Image (tube, rainbow, N blue to C red; front, side, top):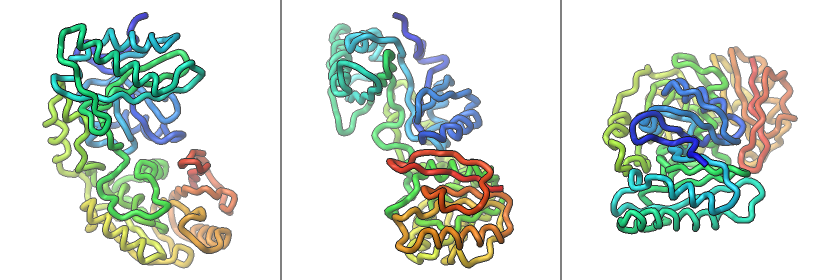
Length: 373
């Protein structure tokens, strides 16, 4: 068997794997094309695969808004047994990636019918890494399950295994630094950004989120419009990679935004929610660019270019959902706007004609992204 992908050696083109939100991978594919010019495709639900120069790892970590985890694929081969996975690892030039005295961990995901489980894969691969160094008469690298310098990711799907190194590390990129205030139904920032993309939101357009919660949608829209990094206080694992220049990533974070202050408005009927939005906007350093008001979305005149919102579905409201949906969509119908995108788990309560529907999962919940024009 021959290795199907991977770097040769450090220079040249690499194969990347990136995780994102399942069912809306199209947003990640489009963003990757815009940022680095790569043609990504869905590897499996929630993961895309593409080839790019190694410098793309810095660009994506500093600028991508739709990705959760970015990995460098070292090998991908067909397998028949768990021993085949160890064999793949044994043929890799691991000292190129895992330096002297650096610690490592193995994380495995398995899908399909196999005689072994993910913990078995992790043990086998971990031993294969140690054996690789012993054969080369090098010091055994220490295992650190809590804060490793390098994480090997192993993806076993049916009769194929892929080995990758995790350039993001323990903390997913969707965990934005500005989210110091939360609420029990807070929207994942990468989904919030995707909603803005589905709305075809452009910098300079007026955007309104009339049910802003803790402000994730308007803050993500503002950061994107001002071309500011989505995550600032995160040192991804790539900064510890011996074959990368960590300075490039940090230099990209320090680059100033290039967009003007956008006309983005966030409102909510709950004063605690609007105060949380102000706090998060202050943490994101976009407070001066974002208008935050306390207002009832069912009783205001909507006059904007784009409406983007995450509708309540029972967790953050104690009232009658049918009444709320009816009143809000009546207000929306009578308003002046060009495009609207609504994320909801209660599509059955939406009385307006929908232009397009994207079905997705939010945890265990079946939800929909509804596009109106």
